[in-house]
Length: 165
Image (cartoon, rainbow, N blue to C red; front, side):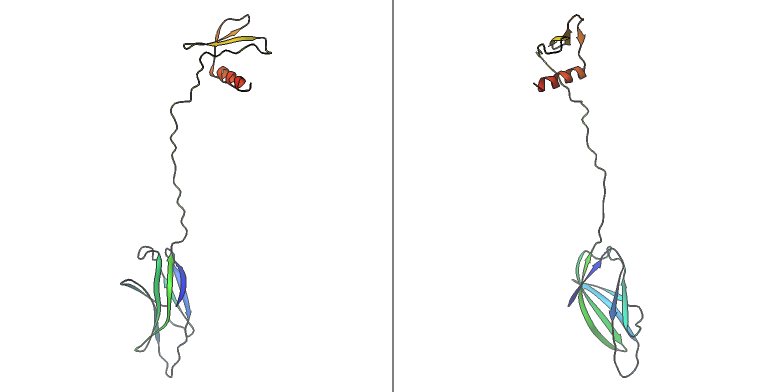
């Protein structure tokens, strides 16, 4: 018994070499039987041409599941029945690709940075002498200038300067 791989969701054409010998001419009818656990499907062949016989299996994905099924080629000549070939058909689905949209939830809140009680001491830059923060306001002191509110960008610059120490 031989095995044959077939596609479950596509049409399959099976061609068999067949030779019928006898003393008188007769017409032959061929069919392929597919069997598995109490179920049988019969597929008639195209007319026998004296050398080969072809059977077309339609897509069977809506009828059977993936798996192995016993298959028999049956030949009927006049009133005589022959089973010259037995095999196992392994039915598999062809490759399928499924793409779906994935939604990622974005945080509605932006990350916030806050500083408290930070002091930066005088460096090479003579303009900045002291940086102070209070819980209600962020203030920078510059020599010879008035107090100014710090922006988020100023805070991030200060944080980066502290990290590099």
